[in-house]
Length: 286
Image (cartoon, one colour):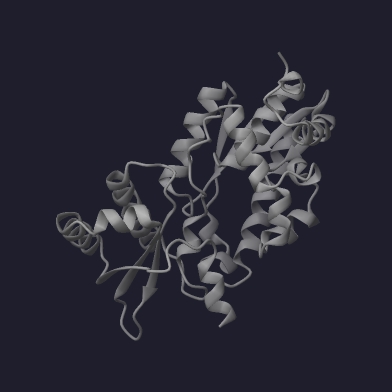
């Protein structure tokens, strides 16, 4: 049974799948693969409809450990090979200094690398997982995408985030039970210099909290703030009610406080507003 003949997929989604299929038919495809729900779906489509497919994961100091582990696991489950390319993104001044256009410069460098790899290996098409819903959000990286030759078939097919979640569940893809992801730099306020030490602290804190949650669907960010004029750090945990309820347990709360302080955070707080994607962008707008 083919995807388009499945009765459990709504006709409106089949129409969108046909648009995506037209992108891939007979082509040798390179996929920008992050292990997230969007790029996992587009990698799956590329394998189903393309002539040949290869995923490329760009690893940098900004990459959460969970993200690269997921990418390796999902590529194995999908039986699609991926290449991991290492980028020292902190060598790029605009990224290291964490300027408000950081995402543009990061995305531009990543896309340039993907295009270079595609040319070297003879791929016909370079694609990413940008979806139709992304086009209405504050995403500086979209400008870099627009300037490149990388294509976004999910956006072209008008796949919304809701469509992707629905289809991922129907197809039982390995990404069906994960929360949204973002690079570690998104936890740091703009114009605060990004260092490997800061990134490691954030990554370790999130890994620790995830061992307590034991649920990959729970959104989680450990945002940091420097308490100027000192170098003391405040950790602001963003999550949903499930983590907040967990931390209501005194023993767990003390464990979280103690462990994060050992990691280098002077103060450990919970954001009562809960998880908010792109919350650091709101600070810029104040």
